[in-house]
Image (cartoon, rainbow, N blue to C red; front, side):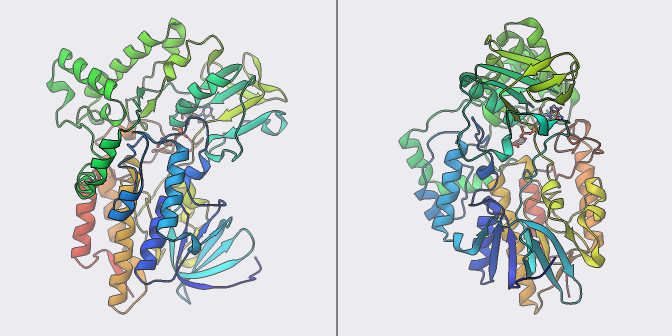
Length: 535
Ligand code: NA7
């Protein structure tokens, strides 16, 4: 591509979500020249794109925010326990404003390729508009869920109605009134959208591939007094967040489900069901380790489904079999009840696969369904998809895809860097604990770590940072060793990447929990950033 413009920055950050905003702020405060780039027209990251009806966060809002600044924490007021997409997006606009970082971003600039220049020891980053920018440090603040997965169903172009992906939702409101609507996919996004769309649509047909366990979110409006006390308590809330596995407090009990009687378990699950959110999957400490423990939670939820859904056949079709919470746990607001409404139909695509999209709708092996609108709630090419999309090339022109064998052999050090990609850093990267926890906490820690690393290197009189191959393979082994104890690796999900057709299973996540991860990182810092070399 023609080089029409060239600017040098010390740090180039891609993404203007939680990660990018905080990264740009921290790097600037550290005295580095930094430039951010974002493909959307404004800040927000996933919260900019995920405007589908019912979109909400599953982390409690008082924890789903930055806690590094007293001022910032005090100035923002959350309305309810689980904030809507709209409210979170407003929060991120507020953050950008308060930290005064928007001026460091260029919007509607998408990275199409990036190359490490061995000779000049810098990154050359190419954008979709043919512009190339050079920088010393190249930071991917691109998140884990930014490459939408629209399944390769033929005939999409033929369909004459409107279709949408939940992660790429139009800015203009979509009207479902008097419409025949299809939703394909029943993950967190589908389960949030389905009850809301059902309220508006003339008819709703849900295409389900794998039935899911959904537990009530139990959202409620915060009381003023509560919010006031929270604001006065930032430092202890932050400490609590930093000291829990999920990066936010739950009622996690350090007890095996098998150590209690059936009656005790029922009471525990019933209580967790009422409280809602992450209380349920953390009710016992071995739900993701012991198949037997897991089965107790799974059967409790199946019983709830059977007692909620009136039509017995539909109830059975909605009952999942996989290990509970080994896919991302789902929290709902009236999901199963929706199937009691006469205008809502469930289609099991394992029994009745989708063959093709026609002009008027969806043709399965059994029926042609006509629709005005089709919603793809089909998820993402998670974790590695957002990185591969940038076509990053390290030493000797090797692409990240080649380096990680298309995502099947991901190797990083602490989720932050990989060998042969000098001065390239990832926030919430593969093999970090981020996707299994409350993201903003992980983000603060990752960005702080990278900033310290850069400053430390500078103190040593250098700017070049690389990770040692041995550190990378050790970390990857450690991640795998812990993961192999869990049920995650035995379950198809976007964690394992098997939600994408023809992808072999992998599990690039550190499952030791956040406190252990942070302790390891702090030790690395104390040991003068061991595992990194400065040249
Ligand atoms: P998810 O959780 O990956 O869910 C995607 C859903 O789409 C899931 O039910 C899939 O079934 C289904 N799917 C995917 N491809 C197809 C095809 N080809 N045909 C039919 N159904 C399909 O994505 P979400 O957006 O809901 O949630 C992503 C994360 O956002 C979530 O985990 C939270 O962290 C927030 P499957 O189960 O793979 O059989």
